[in-house]
Image (cartoon, rainbow, N blue to C red; front, side):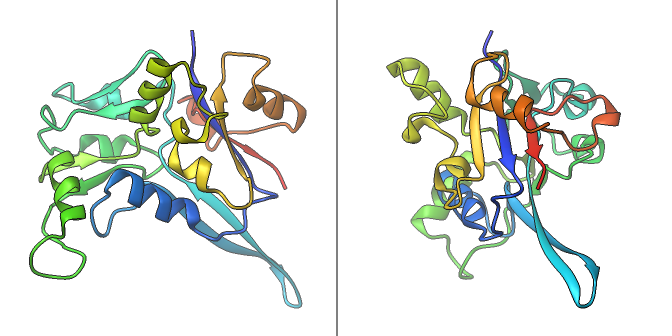
Length: 213
């Protein structure tokens, strides 16, 4: 069974935030919300200081705490891995936001607009997609994954059916593929470069791996 996952090479990430912008554009993400973000921090002491970058987002955990605590069944996980939110079922209780150890969920209050006043046509698409008063998050661009399945294409190889953050990365720091396939590029990278996941001690089994610098 396919289980989609992502590998991020910290040695390659330049902190350009292209993935952040590409995600917002591709998914009509509301103002003030970022499904993908890149945190930066410094290590060392002057004059030997280095600046590092850490891309963050939904980890699409195999044992997702957000799914377990959802009282309405709005949070669910597909058999192929992506964790989703059904806005028609979400009651806006935000239990999932508290349960998520990665800060990957956001409450959509629907009040803010990009330019003040009326929404732009772009924002109207997002308003139709993400209901006001519900929790929203990254979904691994599942519309692209479904398109790939319907047309015999391969996410992670064919750019148009690969998550926007991966296809847009100018440094080639992001990879996407089937974690259950030992011969996939993501599986080989995890083995050869000792890929690790954030907060593995929590037992959530994230589907996003990081390659060390």
